[in-house]
Amino acid sequence: MLYLDDTFVHLGRPQCIWRNVPFDWATATAANGGTSLADSSAERTLSQRTRPPPTRRLAPVPGSCLAAATSRPCEPQAILCSSHRLLLLSLSFFPCCLSNILMAAFAPSVPGWPAAVHPLATGGSAGRRRASVAVVASRASAGRLRMNAAEGGAGAPPVTVSRSGVEVHHFSPAVEALENEGAYAMMARAADIAKSPGPPVVHLEIGQPSYPTPPHITAAAIAALSAGATKYSPPAGIPALRAAIAAHVSSTRGVDVHPEQVVVGPGAKPGLLLALLALVRAPGDVVIIPDPGFPSYAAAVSLAGGVPIRVPVGPAGYDIPALRRAARGEAGRCVAIIVNSPGNPTGCVLGRAACESVAAVAIEADAFVLSDEIYSGLVYEGQPGEAPYTSMLSLPGMAARTVLVDGFSKTFAMTGWRLGYAVCPPYLADRMSLLLVHAVGCTATFVQHAGVAALVGLANGEDAALQGMRADYRRRRDAVVTGLNAIEGVSAAVPGGAFYVWADVSAFSEWGYTAAELASMLLEEGRVAVLPGTDFGPGGEGYLRLSYVGEDDEVLEGVARIKTVLDRLRSAG
Image 1 (cartoon, helix red, strand yellow):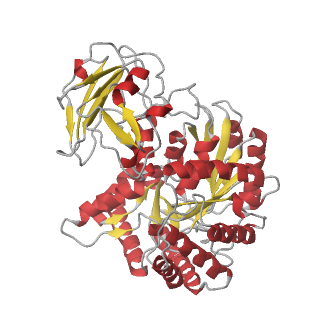
Image 2 (cartoon, rainbow, N blue to C red; image 1 turned 180 degrees about the vertical axis):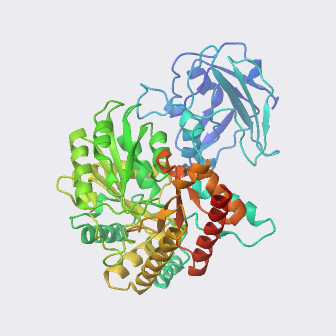
């Protein structure tokens, strides 16, 4: 539904066609009680407003004026909307993913407004910082945007923005607070360091398998492409993949799963975010996340409108007394608890007793558990793809309140393919499927066929490549742990899964070094990239995370450089 503010200026043609429905900007604006002003100047901005910003809730444009987007875009000559944080052209100009990202970035959260309506603007009040956007889009010229941002509507120097990007003065609070994921930020820094003279940078900062995707999986994708699997597919996934995932999860978790419980997405992250968008029902709803834990957990909770509450985790899992206190609702109603096993960044695998303790807290709080099991195929016991650990989904009474999130990136070396899934109760899967419709539409069809080949091959024992990868990871894990423990002031436990070592460097705090400072020094002086534990939450202070997915010689060289730098720091006092 499109909401307009009190002043709406159309420049040039007063009408465009939207699915063969005449859309008259003047009529639409008048329907909102606003003013439509024809103006030939493309430079008009809201500094020329003569009325104060409205404080009322905005009325919708009548349905007769606006229909769903068509593949043939309309051609508005220019649009200017006051107080909006989102520029609107024909929706057919934007893929649904981009338009939803823009919605999330610019649309403010307004408590009390209907959940079915996500307004694009909100009435302002005196003293509130506001933005004005004017857009020109014509046959003769590329789009140009002018923006004013000022306190209380006072005119400020406009910002001219080119087609290459949009510069704004403020976003919605959740988007304003977003930060880059530590691994990507460190990769960028390492790339800059690599440009300077010196030996190549050793990359131990990101979980990027060095192996290619197994050949039979790649062959399946190529065959699907050749067969024409390049069109839209059902939003929740092609039936063959949903059935294969249901069979795989049933086999590895020991619980009956049906295809209607499976939602396929472009990676595992959508399974987390879309579940949270569905489960967080009111501002202030609490979602408990592990500290230290994967950085995207806090970001996803905030984007969903919830409040992330960090609870310490150790080798045995959550601090259960602290978890119970957080779930009792003192900070807000707890709607979900995120569990990650095998874990990132620690590599810890939770035992059954730890999982049962979390389940008991979730039942007491009437909360869901989001069980992130993306490293399920990288447990260093049993066979690839099997789960010799306890899945939250398999515990008595938990199938009705668990969202299992998994994917293909880690186990099958398919990080760039972007293929993951969630398993949850059917009623929640239906809602998440609708969110997929409006967020990404669907996952690439030929990629899903590759996923079928991966799971069918695993079920049929075609796992030689996976066996080899896991054996190599285990060997590298043992070598890294041994090498780190040989460095004075460093200790590292043997992780049970994933492909990370969580190294305790807290002894260096005696000389005033934080984890972030140590990571920077290792990169700048040793040309080895690792992540500071604080990238995963405040509970990570005093730790470094190392990934051992690279080649053997690269990993060992990285540990040797770490020893050189830390030995020098210690000797310098």
